[in-house]
Image (cartoon, rainbow, N blue to C red; front, side, top):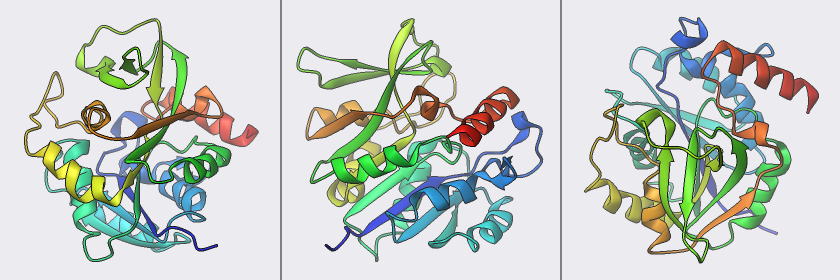
Length: 247
């Protein structure tokens, strides 16, 4: 059976300052290995190439790490930190000649994703426009609003000051996009997307309800709520390190 041609886009222009590191966030060690190395091992069975988006000052160090990944990797620069939407667009633009059938996207600090979840993403995506694993958790950082048909109609962000439920449904920073969505629909959405809220950045997540109104957005339950924990603080780092040692 021939595997779909997939590429992985990893926005990694963030700094590790909140983690007490002077290196790019993607190179912060988790149990002795850079975050990017964890991602390379996790997704190598499913993708044929990786595009890593780095800041200009971090590109050389990230490129050195990327050369050691078990899958072909290319580093491209995001000149200004204008948000995840713009970072993903830069990464997808670097794939124009390759034209993979699916484009997977993951945040560089989502290293707690379980291998079973990655396998289920590959098995579930099919011909969907977008597929993503979700978790239900207390005090969510992100929450999806759904209509009576269970279609995603909105997304709330704690960092943007939105009113959040005590218990909510969150993404895991992992997404599978069809080629048509990656190369056409995301560009359409970006043409009218404006910087929002407290961060003043162009966020990727509002694209999900936008697309759900126009196409097939699938979700499935992840293996464990810990998988949704991104590493933003020393406490997150300790918790994810313990989870990876256990799992």
